[in-house]
Image (cartoon, rainbow, N blue to C red; front, side, top):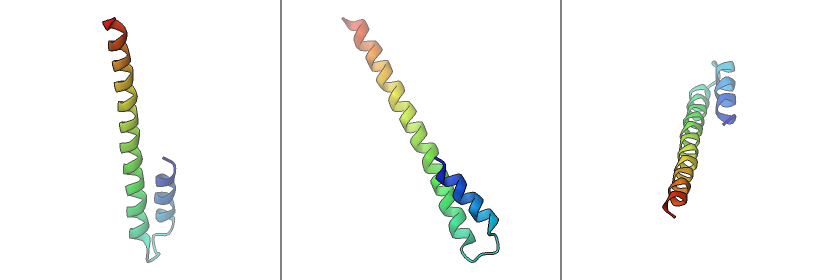
Length: 59
């Protein structure tokens, strides 16, 4: 979660470098993966809690 912004910041500090676009794209991919994994984890927790509530009410 912290790796993506760090890589993007590093890319913006070195705009004249030949690997600028590669590092920027890599940092952006890490940021997008972090957002997806955060969303997936939260949805798993919510799903687990809602199933637990349904099981308690059934009997």
